[in-house]
Image (cartoon, rainbow, N blue to C red; front, side, top):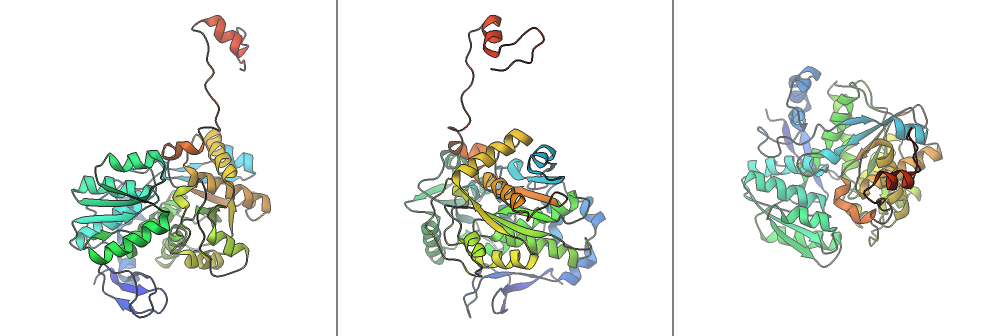
Length: 416
């Protein structure tokens, strides 16, 4: 019996075969993978996982592929950092950073979802892959497609950060800049997907693609000694990442890998694009689309596909949502770098900024085991902080110049 039973509509429950489809023909609701948990439970165990590959594919039993990983075999299993310095600053005794700034090969959590999407696309017979992206997804699709020998098209907003544009071009995909924001790009890609037999990872392959985010929950639990934390804080763009973390935690309990899920799932957005967090704060179970205006471009989705489900997951878990200003984003990036030596992109600054707000509000307490998800490397968004970190101290090439500049005596310890 196959571990994937079907695709199922998240609204009306109608089931479909596990093909390249993503919308219910009855109610137009989104589809997701429905698993045969009885079969999975008979085959999975902590021991089997621990003896598996040193990558996210140690959780292959819980991912929507039929065979072995053929794309992205080294993605995932990124470090869980005990953030003692940042925790002391914020007043948290047990704070952890799930650090996807070092994910393989493109330094963001998107390497997880793309590895799953392209493996499944290949199983379904596709040779050309594509995506609509705010940057990180395009980088990952371009890199994984190059390694897999697949053709690729990546569609991006025309105002994307330079490092992310370069991070596409180096792999030589077909890079298409669209004059508009992400929502404009996504609408165009939906039209193209209807005309061309390509695997659009976040359109017709989306039910499989989104499942890759669950591996962040699986790894977190294993790295915490097979326990779920009290709180997680995750950035929200479409809202999919947050919903899949919540799904992954509940799957682990369903399969007997953990005993309980005490976790409150908290969402973070930038104020310049915060439709989900705004709905939460106003007590609504629906969001109103917005036009993005924020330096956190990787989160700049004004009409988030999973916004409703993110609100639902946060509500079910008893978590919270909040948003921070662009200035707070920059301060969050600097704070994480200066306390833990982790250089995050703007989405990471959003996460740290909202984490700080939730602690000040009393939503997260000192003794709570808390995990903050840092989803991409700061080298991708250098423009955001380049004017906020100062300049090097310039001296003449002499010992006197050095000592005078830093007011340093023979015993050292001087300051500039």
